[in-house]
Image 1: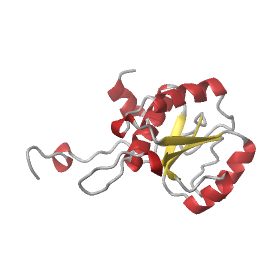
Image 2: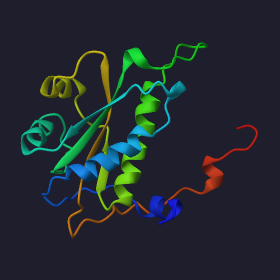
Image 3: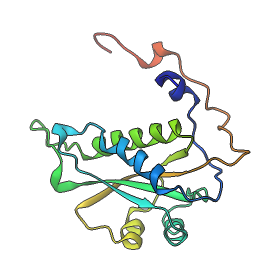
Image 4: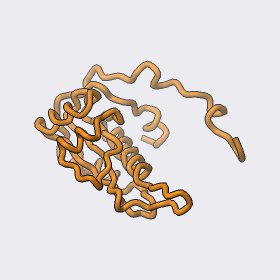
Length: 172
């Protein structure tokens, strides 16, 4: 499948089969995240794989947006390993983690694994439940699994603003 077809067909899955992803599938998805570009290639990303019944139950304590997914990946970054922009001190970590999450999400879609990118989670509870050190900053939760037979996109999935509303050339 070419990239634009993949991007167009991919949607946020909110109903999953109760099957944990096999390790070989997880490994291939993680490889895509490992290949993601990061600021100066410092690779500050850290990915927590949640793929057991026990860890899935702990995840439910951290977010209501778990959608009973059998598997999830929490994408974080190490605050001490980010590239920093000299002009204003902005760090690349949140952007790096977002790029990694996008790679994970799109590779999953290519493999028939459904995902939903979740930002609605309690980072303090996540730290507590999964023993996340202070220097590791959670950014994105990717709940994932094989889509249920009756899974379908939300009603607004196929609607996009006109390109003229979101793209400017030369200046705004």
